[in-house]
Length: 122
Figure 1 (cartoon, rainbow, N blue to C red):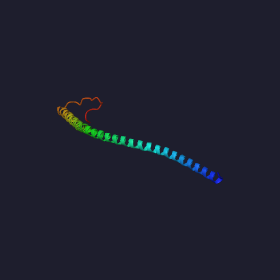
Figure 2 (figure 1 turned 120 degrees about the vertical axis):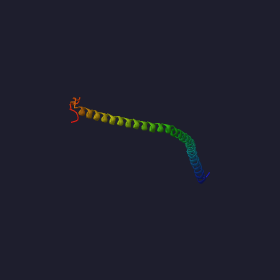
Figure 3 (figure 1 turned 90 degrees about the vertical axis):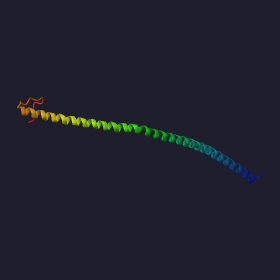
Figure 4 (figure 1 turned 135 degrees about the horizontal axis):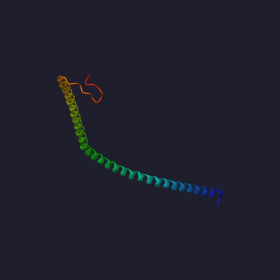
């Protein structure tokens, strides 16, 4: 065998080895990419399912919150009414105190000492 033929054979073997190595690397990268693509697809389906479940739960929560909001609004109105009643009672009490003081003055009675140490309205 001549030197040129030997060199050509070695070159061909080297090329075949490089091609096989590249094919091996390519197939391992290809397999890894296929695995990742399959995982992404599976995760996408899982996310879509979770998205649908979340939409259902959000709708259910919205329906559930409506009665609670109505109850809160009613309670607020009732509390405001209680506040109005308290204001009305305080106004009646002030009017009664003024009436009591007016009667006391009309009858000419002495001003009673108060718990605060003051003497009447003056």
